[in-house]
Image (cartoon, rainbow, N blue to C red):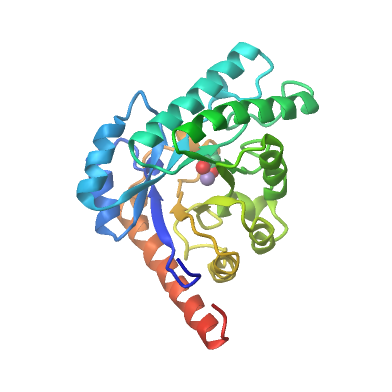
Length: 288
Ligand code: LER
Ligand code: MN
């Protein structure tokens, strides 16, 4: 692959609330995506069925959108609770492996937990230990982790990519790296572009959404410099659209029709046009 290889796009099925997976796979394939992101609920979703459906539709599974609840808290002060969270992430590695999916999204603590329950230094140690334990297991299944940063209203633990890079380095793991989500980055980073640039070589996965979490092109984020820097740093992972309705809790935001056909179509159309424009300009400028 060279730096002019086009990006691969995925759509996160988290927002297809109440829909049969077969329909979700069909829609994502129909609008020209390379892959679908699957919700991390191994007890509800049969990975063999997903593997069959995606293979039939000619798309891949890009990633697992893990659901970190209070019961799945990798830095909980109770060791038994942390152990349960580690088991959840290990289960996700098995789940991903069945689907040939390369990446499980990891965040150290529960979504909507906005303050620590213990001393921050202890929580850091637990985060390193929990992620390392689950990550060593995932490596044996051929699966990588992406440490995702969330905005301050969803988590106090990793808000910026520099923090995720430090945590990732502390685990000593080689299977994976960090993850930026433009919705969160737009709130927390002083520069989305520079945060990505500083993550060169360790960026495992990317979530794209506009500033209001709808499809790119409808709100405030300028995706041209973002695409440009991702080409600059030779990012080879998926660009996965994670679009969600306006609600504080992203896992309880409910079903909204525009996130089905309308945004699935608009997201990839907008980003492919931006990508083409950026690549054409770079070619004129003599950049790869
Ligand atoms: C998950 O990818 C994410 O970005 C968080 O907002 C939790 O849903
Ligand atoms: Mn995300």
